[in-house]
Length: 548
Ligand code: AMP
Image (cartoon, rainbow, N blue to C red; front, side):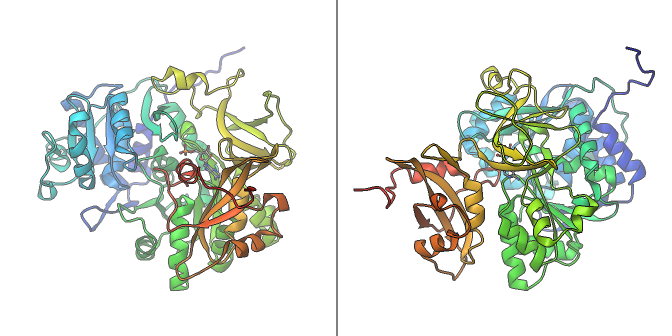
């Protein structure tokens, strides 16, 4: 081998904000704040405040490798923390406030966080857990003195005061690009949460991989993206890093994430693209139906995190003229693995064909290799038919969980590929179709029923707002599908009507044995349907097909 003679410059997160401050200096960063108003500044302003924060962190004694936690909505201060903490070589540990208190206590102690930066909204939550937090972990409230709440938190600091006394310039340290920059715990449905430790290198490479998708996902200079996807989970799908690179204008939504609030903010700020989980789009679609239009200027919706129901994609595209991109990913991979990126020719294909591709989980991003395997670990062909467990490999894919040998031991196969826990098929054009989670698939008489496909079909019924299919036990077939649905406001339907509706859309043996209507479906901390909770709730449900 002949070694190349190019500079070995480390790929560091700090280079992103420096680039934005220089090249995208005037691009606005907009934030709907907890304080109730809308805050605006530019990437250049942001870099100055990031420097102040970084200088304070160092003065406080934060050292490379130390963990610094955040518990905050999407806003400019949270964005500043991403860059200031990573910039000095420390690790930005984003915490999902929707975790159960027990999980939150576990992860803060497991990560051994030294500081906790929190929005005032979360002060009461942390107050209650204060005596179970790591010793010496100091809370910092993300506000100015006037907005400091009355709180029982031990020695709370005030964010704006910390920044006030510091220099607004900094020369970033240079260090190994393999150093950790971020930490995020998966809100695993069983056992303790597991920490994924992103490196500067993986973050930069993932960001560059995302740039390939560019235009199609709203990453355009000067145009606006509204990240509903939270900064507190999986790096908001990479947005805090790619938006400054491209010079895209972020419109951070703060705490109000319901359909009407999002609609109003998008309208007011002329947002071009919005990213979030399907539940958010179900809420927004309801508001769009009410108003009879999409928010002014909205063109692109990126949906991911769980399977987007086909009827939702169809409605947003055909009724409201939006361009939907469907993506798949995991906390363990930075997180985006695939997006429904269509070639120019594909974009001109008939609507049904286009919608078919958009119902897939998309094509892999550069740098993310995919393989599907059978039960013995043998590779399956990418013929669009064979399906099996999905494994991934790449420079932005986790090699082990943070300080968790037991969980790490089972995470990879013998060739070093990471197990996703998803069952998938891949077609010859590279489109990935997630059939199900391995845990959620319904095993009926030795055959598999995809809960995702069944939910997708049922979502086409005009009375269904949201639904989930889970396995219910059956003495003859082992498991049979049970559909649990929430009806749209003012609509009614019976179990038989739903089954009749499904009759020509799925195989006869896929039809749910029972349909139950509920007021609300449980969601996990990351907005996915919590099938674990549903299975628990309906574990004693006797299907009408069970003979007496
Ligand atoms: P998380 O680590 O919380 O982001 O969860 C990752 C898991 O979410 C994946 O392994 C999939 O099971 C699921 N997931 C993410 N995106 C999609 C999608 N577009 N369609 C179906 N499942 C998805």
